[in-house]
Length: 241
Image (cartoon, rainbow, N blue to C red; front, top):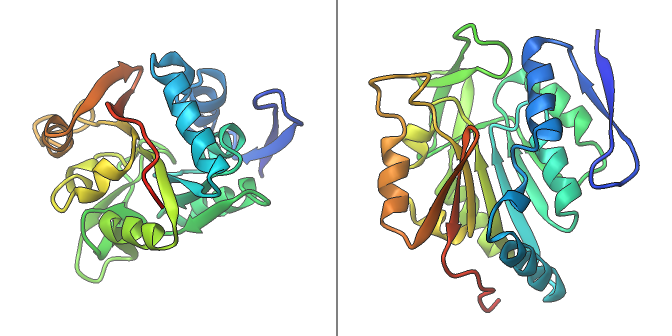
């Protein structure tokens, strides 16, 4: 039995948000809409990021927001309200979560992928470690029940369509270890990265190391707010189309 929470985001008209009233679903709503975990306004570069978005829209281009680990759609709905002219590509591999993601993003500019996002294209299996609906993980397994697609291929296709990468949000329960392994050229195309690292959940496995190695070689700021790392490029400019 689904429940509905009415959301008002940015002073806009209320929108229903469907959830299962589980601790995980309530937690997602609390983090995204109450705690404002993805709010860029807390950053010193917030105005620069907003100006970049505005310039992109004014130039006739479409900003791209990549949402890896979209769960039931809270982050996608939040970004759609915050950046209404952006196109969001939302990845969620778990079918139950994906069904709610689809329902909650109905009518929004969100492309839905019932897939995992990783560093390579391969078959993986979804694993439930018992942390609730927001804790599903993927593991490499021949003949797995889920498709993983390479981020580099997704971004290359988006660039070919003329989209302008703006934000990549990543919350994939330790999957960042594979996502940020080479090839990582796609990372530098996004001025803003929002990544939750999971060393706290998987001690001794070094899941954060590939991300840290990747961004440490780039000219970016590294800002920690709550559970998320915000990585913002030093140079925020709109390249030629």
